Image (cartoon, rainbow, N blue to C red):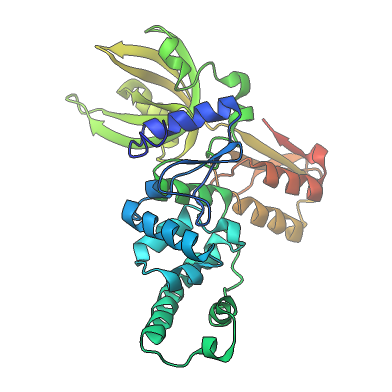
Length: 355
């Protein structure tokens, strides 16, 4: 079923979520496992490489054919050496995670992408002109390739950035979702999601969490400002409208791509279901208790750690010595489990609270 709808952006996510409910893992594209279509690997589903943007079925067919004929690819350069690729194609394969299993970070591969393409062209040109190369002196092909391209030691992107790359190259999320880290903090603050909301009647009070997209402001005939946006979660999306009477109070929280908690009423307008918004709030607040407001080194270390997980939750410090709260001075933070674990190791579990 996933193969039959792999060109339909709205349908594939539905099947991915259904697989999650059924306990069937859906794996992202992989240069050494993916085929043109979706395929079964053990008790898992491997994503179709032909569904990656800028790659195309013919190119994937050649990648798979070469892999079957001459063995798995050992590196990004190995792929460039064995097949002619263009820059957009290679960039999309990196961003969707197709090379992750080979052990290099996506940040490293993107930084070396142009060098890899050039090296691949050079190796093919040398082969075509019958010039002597390292291969002629008994060196293994993979050793020669690796000897000519050293990846820089660049830190990996944040989990949010990796997911954004995945969506850019595929059209939706496969290995995770930006809202996964917020799910447990929504808790009883929400009473529906973008799937279950369809079962509610028009006029029902709704509380729902999601990510803002397609945000648009417009001026009414009376000269007032209102806004519309799409709110998306792991299960779909729904249109939201903020009328002028609430826009003045809520406009500061209306930011594209931000995760929010939305409150309002469901309205069925001639078959078009939407939420009339009357409340917006950040999904989570992170409170960190530090012993000394004058310990600049510790404060800077914590801020540096928080900046590695940009998101839409609020972060506040509480200092024991002066017994007061202070804004952390950040645009927002993602309550990622790895971040919370790192903070707990530094400050103690009892000094890290998310509400």
